[in-house]
Length: 279
Image (cartoon, rainbow, N blue to C red; front, side):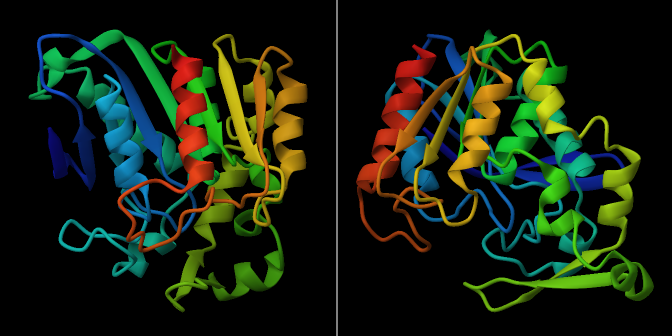
C-alpha cells in the first residue's frame, strides 16, 4: 500500500505532509522514518523507490516534509512557500519529527495496527542525518539509527555561519538553489535559535551519548558533505558502523527528477546495507 500526501494537522502550527509505504497484512512491522535534508523534500529524486524497497522488505516506511521546508500541502515538490522556508530552524525540525513519531504511535494513526511499537528506526540524509542523531540521543523510543551522508556539526554549516553582522543588520540572507535557481531566504531567527539551543543542537555530544546501534553511510567522494564528517561521527561513537560508498556523490547517484524505474547502483547498495543493519 502507498499512502501519499497525508496531512498531519496540529493546533497552532503548520501541518506536516507525510507518506506511508507498506505491505498490508496482519504482521506488525518495524517502523522506519526518513528525514530529508537541507533544500530537500520527501518526493525528491528516487526517495519513492527507496520507500518501495523498504515496504517490499517488510517495513512500514514513512517519509515526510518538514513543516517549514518551503513546500505546501498543494505543492509539496520544490519550494513555493519561501516565507515558510525563511522561518525554518533546527528546533522546528526536531519538533516536527517528534510530532510524526507521536502521531504514528497513537490511535489517531489509521495504520497503527501495522506498526511494531517496539521497533523504530530513524534514517536521516544530510542535514536530516543531524536531526535524526539529535532525536535519537534524547528519545528512548528510537531503537536504531542510520545516517546517510550526514553532517557532523550544525555550527559550521552555512546556515549558522558567515557574515553575521550583515545578516543581523539586514534580517535575512539568501542561498542559491542551484537546481531551481531560487534565492532561498534564511531569516536571522535561524541563527538566534541555534545559539539559544546550542547545547541541545550539538551533534558531537549527541553521538557520544547514543546507546543504540548506529550505521553511518557516506560516499568517499561526497562533494557536499565531506567524508571526514562521517569519520568524525564514527570516532565519537566507536561502536557505530561506518560504511563507505565508493565512487559516488552526496545523493548516491540519484538526481531530481528521477525517471528510471530502478535505484541507481550506489543508492541500491545504501538501501541494502541499511536493511542488513536493521536485521
